[in-house]
Image 1 (tube, protein in one colour):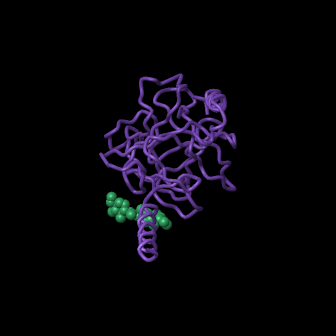
Image 2 (cartoon, rainbow, N blue to C red; image 1 turned 120 degrees about the horizontal axis):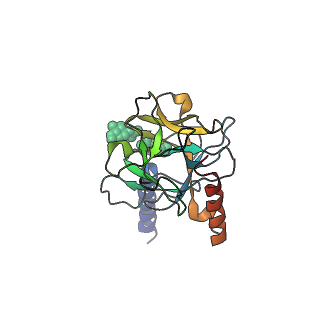
Image 3 (cartoon, rainbow, N blue to C red; image 1 turned 45 degrees about the horizontal axis):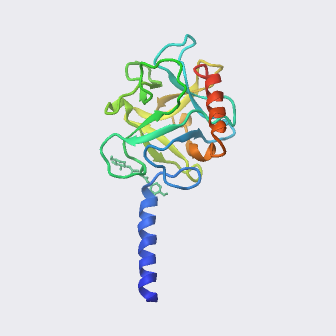
Length: 221
Ligand SMILES: *[C@@H]1O[C@H](CO)[C@@H](O)[C@H](O)[C@H]1NC(C)=O
Ligand SMILES: *[C@@H]1O[C@H](CO)[C@@H](O)[C@H](O)[C@H]1NC(C)=O
């Protein structure tokens, strides 16, 4: 009995390694699941305070659709997102290099409710580096993102679109970094995924505290 069990152990190991190789992992190394909530958090560096991502107007005068900004407040987790495949794929976890939609999830959403909460590239813009906006459509090419490997540290990724890589530039609100599409590698946004339920596990009041903090700066930055 010893040999078969070792063999099956090895096979299991090989299979799980094959799955891990292509699966996206959250900050604890677990697979990122379709439909579950994660904070997409910019990786903290010398030049980046690691604050979370929040909806924000792309101009000084608030107008819809909103863009996405990294809060200047470190330790603020931002608003969680969920992922799903743009095509019908029978997997409950998200793989790299595969088209997905990204959607903000919050019960509190005071403005621009006529727009969806799906991320999209502002392809109506003639800007060389168009903004990432909120108001995409499930099947629309401008709403398709891919999670790609980076080698910055474990469990970190970047996002790509058919228009270019997602990066940041100092935005309208106190120069807080605003998300856009760029081909300038120095602007690439490197993120990790932190499971929202873990972050808020303690109590529901912790959840509402996070959401209230989000509301306080939303839609300003
Ligand atoms: C991502 O990285 C993992 C581990 O380094 C590798 O096995 C996998 O093939 C990579 N995936 C892509 C799409 O590059
Ligand atoms: C990503 O997918 C495209 C096709 O969808 C393929 O051409 C490319 O080689 C893939 N890249 C990686 C790093 O696996």
